Length: 300
Image (cartoon, rainbow, N blue to C red; front, side, top):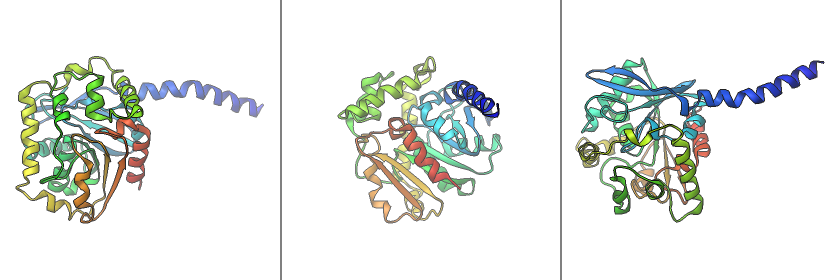
């Protein structure tokens, strides 16, 4: 009798659990807002555990993270998706310098009552994550840098193939294969389609993606100053004692992972993970695997 009861619970649990996960997953996470100065910052939150704040790429919104990657991390952490002022669901003035973006992120953390937190940045968001780490080191525990480049001059520049498609008002699957994946790889192209389908489980994803030249210029201005590096962040990065994880694809036409090579022997507490036949979104091509790498890195 006891075995039958246990079996019944297992059967019922197997039927309910997938629905419960779907109901609480990234695809269904509600959009919230918080006032930060004169800006109204939009964010989403899911999962439980130590908080991780996620900062998105050039033209990225709350909608453009792959929900499979977010759900993988949310198994052990509270995921907090941050959106820049003037981008996507957020209202206010989009930053045109990393200093302004750092102030926005810092104000957001204050508004949510986050004393310390881990930080994950993808692409342009990875530049901001590095600036924040260097400028506000007391607030950050650990940092994950996804498909991004270090401060200062990098030997491998942004490729024309990336820019040709990155500035289109709306990107289709063929664009995304070039922008975020490795179009020469059949596996990568398949993963591009799967990731796009997961992202577009939410309606009207394209409607909130920044598409105006004036918005692009603000991104470029902030990134340009970051790489001019008048404040010496590149050298300061080599002195950071906090744990840093860098994840890159071997065929990134935007922020070549190979640009980290000169710093590998100089950084004090960094781990580097490269994926072959992978472009600018390793966490979208391999959401579960990259999720596990990040979880292992963030484990106490």
